[in-house]
Image (cartoon, rainbow, N blue to C red; front, side, top):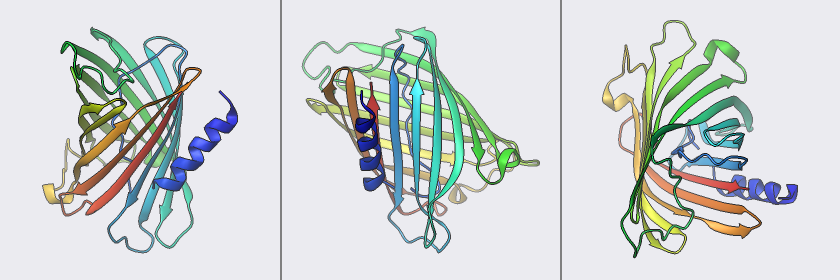
Length: 261
């Protein structure tokens, strides 16, 4: 696959999408040996944002799976504050480990799977470990995250869940929890419609804030997959997420574009 194709995909994703203080992603359990993945993850806050706060966040990630069970990931997060200039916010490194439980089935790129055939059930379990290094604060504000990735496909339904513990390096700060989940149904060739939920509880294992001071989001999402030929698969995803706690933004538009080759 040519460099021009990757560059075009990146430019398109950055032009369309943008985030509030977080990017929103449901991490999949699929690991394909010798497979490359390029992904642009973008979130734009649709509600009002105070000057200096982040209006959007963009993450560019690249991964390569050297084995059938391990996929390392490297990512760069870019923040776009209201009234300011875009800046590199953090460097991120992670790994997905496919665990020898379930049937190890990676979900089909054909989003009409199961729409009219036998309703087979496939279960996949993976583990995720991630490290985030802030660009300015460095190791003092770094964090380690880890937890399970669960993926279940039954006929036209695909359900994915992430639940990660987040361990900050900062002194005196207790570990937190973050979750992401999606449930989607095939609605035709190459398309799924569903719902996503995202949220986090800072210092969940200690001085956790009241529920209204936590950030939780839910909303509809659409997913697709296009076979570009020569082993290339383009997977766009868009979600409109509403915050239902006081600390969360009223509404955010989340857009991802993933290219597998």
